[in-house]
Length: 210
Image (tube, rainbow, N blue to C red; front, side, top):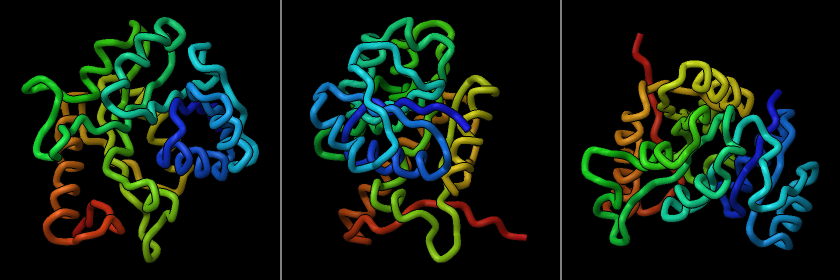
């Protein structure tokens, strides 16, 4: 089991923390609003509360903040992230959900990695799951797929083990630049919500034919 620090207090932070606790991990909640952090920890039961800006206790640190502030958060924590696995769950979509705010040819995860200290390993994951779908877990007995991308094999192995402990299925897509593809998949999901499915009670997964 791992120790997990989750930076953020939103719906994804809560869903990930809840599943991590159920999977037997120790969970630390970190947010800029101490009262809200304590409130979320109390609702979850079993989570501890860390101080914003202080070194995260977890070996795995989940960035559950909006993309616009993610790189700044990573820069703020600086060398305290050295040696840790940093999971980026963000989607750098623009305001009209028609494209990205990242530089052409890059991804949100790659931009976040630029802000991380040497020795921190950024892995993209969870960005194609809505929080309520993640909270609900397997659909009709089928595990939810979590697409991951990262440059460090050991970091991806640790994230894969973490994902499996949550009752989900990790799907390794390759090196960190592949994060751009999963971010495009998240953009596709937004298009489906707007133009065809009209709700968010779905997930993207892989069906393997024999």
